[in-house]
Structures are given as C-alpha cells and as structure tokens.
View 1 (tube, rainbow, N blue to C red):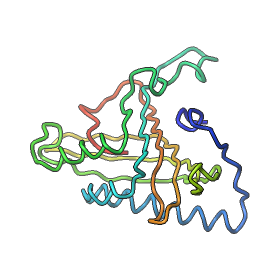
View 2: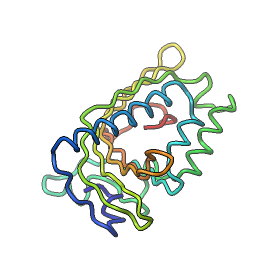
View 3: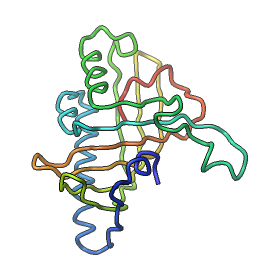
View 4: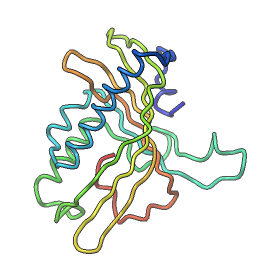
Length: 194
C-alpha cells in the first residue's frame, strides 16, 4: 500500500471484481490518465489544474539503496516526516505552473518538450469517502521523456499510485504518489509534472 493511502485509510478500499464493469471502469480511468498526459504534454497547465481535486496530495519520496530485508521500512522517505522530491498540494502545484507560464523560470526557459507514456493501468480498489463520493485506487507505470535546449535529454521512469475521485464535475485526481526507480536524480531538475 502506498504511503498516502495508508496515511489516510479512514475508509478502506475494497477490491474491485475483475468483471465487465471493472474493464469499463478501467477504460474510463485510462482515458482520464491519457487526457491528463496530453494536457501536460501540450502545456495546457491551467486545464490540467482543473482536473485536480482541491484537497490534492502530490508526493514523490526519495529512494535509498538499503540492505536486503529493509526495503519496506527504509527504501523510501516518509510523507510529512522526511525530505522528498515533492510533497505538494493543489496550491503549490498551481504556483509552480503559474511560474513556468511567466517565461521567467530558470529551469524552464526555454520550455522543455515533454512526452508522457502511461501504461499498466490497474484499478486496485474502490471506496466511498466521507462526502459520499466514490474513489478509486489506481496503479500505473509511466515514462516521461524531457528534451530541453539542444542537448539536454532526460528519462523518468517509475510508477504511480493514485486515488481518483468521481465528482459531479467528472473524475479528479485526489492523491498521487510517484516512485522513481532512481536513488540519484540524473536530471538537472524536476520541474515537470508526473
């Protein structure tokens, strides 16, 4: 279970049976994730921000090489307790997006070109939150390619564990935990969104 999901397991997710309804739901969530990737790749950051829940938690822990048997407790930093690559909410993501769009952003001037690939999408559970909204635990893999200036090229590969909420305004991302396989970041910065 992800750090975010375990930290807020007030109502537990129940397994979604792999029947025809599951595959219909998975297809709907895949389309949401593909649309999200397209918005980000097209630099439509304001439209992307509208797909996020107001109470969003966006977390990317740092990873460590640890001895065998210690992975569960020591391989990744803990949310709200240790340093991480990202520990953000919708407000901070909005400020980052606004800064990038000013054209006065050292790490993104000139703007990077991104291409995001999303795969291995699985719905691992569902629940009803305290507001009566349906939420889905979703696991996926990603490959984010970044090209900047003439020679800067970076590849970020990892997995995401999301909580996607069904609202009256459509699906919204409520939680995202991003896990990169790298223990040392090889890129000059991580100004993009995952």
